[in-house]
Image (cartoon, rainbow, N blue to C red):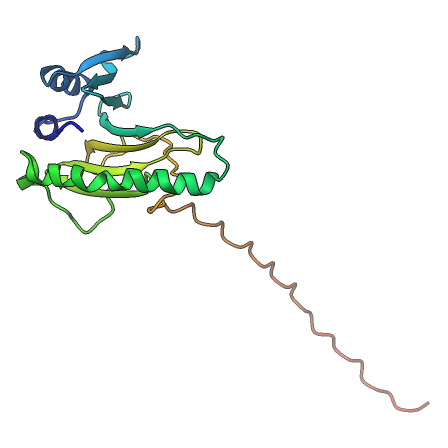
Length: 206
């Protein structure tokens, strides 16, 4: 797998993660643009040495996701559950070397592991995440849906913004974003006021 330390270090130094700024870093790092959305001023998908990169979001801020390992799911397997467990385990086994490379690379001294959830609501089978100033770097294994590949990715995005939001439901997730709060129970209607009935005075026997 390729070492992303140089790209991540340069991206983390950007004042803002805009599409054009990310594109410039990728071009200077030897990545080749593959797909360009006519509505955007930057290429959205990139490749280098068997890895892929995806600039996500419409702006002004974006995030960049690097895919270092990917396996398609063979849904024709007889024992699909056992096969998927093996696929997940294979992906997770590739994660520690990626984490070690990040920690020992150019970005390593700047990585901080705070005591907070940095997944931004995304679901990962297993992951490690750090703060780098006002950015987040995350390395993790995911599968967005049952018919999508199992992937090992490295994500860099702005910290604490809602600019980039995608539907990223994991399949075998270790972290799950909380669901919406249940609606409050309906109010119990107030009982009607009772009017005391005054008894007529007894007149005694006739």
